Image (cartoon, rainbow, N blue to C red; front, side, top):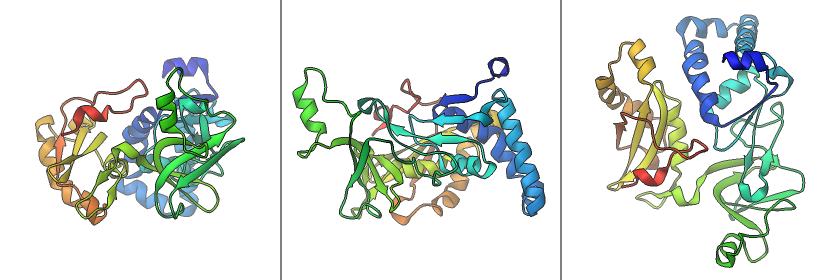
Length: 295
């Protein structure tokens, strides 16, 4: 962070992992302390505390972020961090894009953006959901616009697979679009798990619940013998500070599994949790290489 103090950036382009690490290690644990919860319940005091937290975060990133803020993309930001950033009024925008779209598809100003949404269609872009009820039933996100690519170089077969007959680009992502045009991403089509009763389970949504739990750095939900197993890479550093030994983390998560399942719909409840001793293998964008962990 010394480099940031020297450079003093006013725009910070980042993937969610970096922002989530800062908020989960510093901000969220502080706001969850019993004394802090009491103070935050007092209207006048609440705003003073949140303003101080906001100033501290901006100073941590060089002191100039209030001029523009964070621009977050590459993956969905977790709901717990999204909620806290909006509560503290950290300037940020969450965008959705792809290389094939050069790359922005949707975004919104942080003051207007809906919680958990990745914004509205960018200028000269159109977004539709391949669903009979786009507001309530997830479908594939399809787009059309001036910055959508024409096709893959010398690969007509691959190009034909990603465009509909009426010329819309198929993103491979699933989502819904509310009445105001705000896009909410549910997960990747290829990652979707078919539940035992035929329900569509989006592992990314279950992972959002897991990632909001104490001592979770990141997680991955996989299908395992007809049920769902969560692979969790814990925050060993914070756990050690709080008196949890590394070898005891499996027992810790076994003990909180029932509470976690209370936050999940019946068709998406977890069968078990497995603790990872090392972080997941990741892509250059810091996304987990899911295919390495399928069973």
